[in-house]
Image 1 (tube, rainbow, N blue to C red):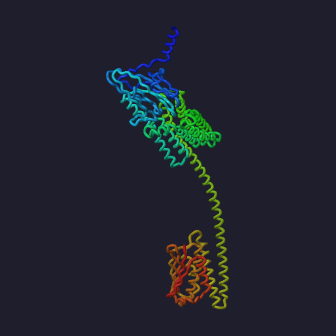
Image 2 (image 1 turned 180 degrees about the vertical axis):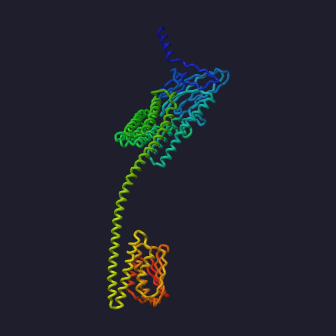
Length: 598
C-alpha cells in the first residue's frame, strides 16, 4: 500500500494534469506555453485521436525548441475557461513564422497553417488562429507543430484582436525599418560602385542582397507577401543555398576588402571555403544527403573571418578595425541564433531582434569602413601623385636644361653654317661678277648674269635668315629683294606691284623665290621695250596656294620657248618640289599661275 502511494505522488510531481486558464474579455498578451502540457511524437504519425490518449508532460517554458527534427512533431495541449457571462473572441498567435506545418484542433474543427500553408486571408507575419468561447465555457485545444527542413520553435500567445493588431503593426514597422535601412545602404553602395568600380563594393552589395534575402525569409516576410505556397515550399527546401550565397559573399568581400592575397596561407583557406560551402549546401537541399544540422560546420567560418580580420589589422591593414567590430557583433548573433536553432539554447525571448540589430550595425560599420578605405586610398594616391609630380618636375627641369644646352649648341652651329653658306655664296657671286666683267661677248655676259641672279635669290634667303633669327620670314620682303636685284641689271622702267596675302614656310619659300627669279627675269628680257608692269600675287583659296606673275608686255608665241633652261628649272620646281601645276596665259602680256596643295 505504501509503494502504491509513493508511485502516485511521484506521478503527480512528474505528470501534473493541465489546469484551465481563466480568461475574460480583457485578457491579452498571455503566454500559454507555461500553462500547457506537451508531447513529442517521435514518429510524426500519431493522429489527434491517439494523441488524446497519450500522457502529456507539464511545460514551464515560454518558448520550446526542438531544433531540426524532420521526423518528430510537437503536440501542445492547453485548456481555456471563459469566466465571464458573455462570449469572447481571442487571437492565438503562433509566434514563429518559419514552422512549416501547424495543425490547430478546436473540437471537431481543424485549421492548417504554417510557412507551407499560409491562409489567403492572413494579414499577420506570424500564423494566427481564432478562438471563441461561450459564457463560462471551458474547452481544451490541441496544436501540432512540425517542420521537415526548418527548425521547430514554438511560442503561443493569446491576444485581444485590437491588441494583436497593434502588436503586429509594430512588428511590421520594425521589419520595414530594418529592410529600409538595408535597401538604403544597398543603393548608396551601388552608386559608389558605379563610379569607383571597386570590387570590394560589388561584393559588399552582393552581401547586402544576401542578407536581405535571408532575413526576408527568416522573418516570414517573403513567404507572406512575395511567394506562393509552392514558392514557399521551394525556398524552404533550398534555404541552404541562400545561406551558402551569404557565406560566399562574405568570403569574397573579406578577401577583397582585407587584401588577403598578400597572406597566402589564409587566402588559400578562404578560397577553400568558397568551394566547400556551396557543395555542402547543395547536398543539404531538401535533406538530400545532410539535413540542416550541417549548419554546425559553418559556425567556425565566423571565427575564421574574425581571425583574418585581426591578422590583417596587425599586418598593417588599417580598415580591418571596422571589419573586426562589425563581424564580432554579427558572429555573436549568428552563433546564438544557430545554437537556438539547433535546440542547444532556448533564449529566443531575449534575442528576438539580435540578428536584425547586428546586421544593421555591421552594415553601417562596413559602409564606414569602405568610405575609410577610399580615404586611405585617396591619401595614398595623393601622396603618390605629389611624389611623382616632384620627380617629374625634377626630371623636366633636368631635361629642360639639357635641351637648352643642346638648342644653344645647335643655334651656334646653325649660325656658323649660315655664315659659311653666305660667305661661299658671296665668293661664288664675286667669281661670277669677275667673269661677267671679263666676258668677251654680250651673250656670255647675259648668261652669266642669269646665273648670278639665280644664286642671288638663294643668297638673299640666307641673309634674311641671319637677320631675322627666330622671327618668321615675310614672303613679300623676300620677293622684293629678288626683284630689286633683277632690276639692277636692266635699264628699263618697270613698275612692280605686290599682293602677298600669305607667308610661306622656308622650304617652299626658296622654291618660289627661284621660280620668281626666272619668270621676272624673262619679263625684263623679253616683255618690254622701255617700260611696263609686273604684278606678283601670293594667296590661298581653300586648301590650295597660288603664286601668279603677270606682265603687260608684248608676250610671245606659245611655240616659241626662248629660255629652255629657265623653263626647265621652273617646271622641275613646280612639279617635283611643290607637287603642283602651272598654267600660262598669253593675252596682252603673259600670266603664269602656279598652284599647289597646302
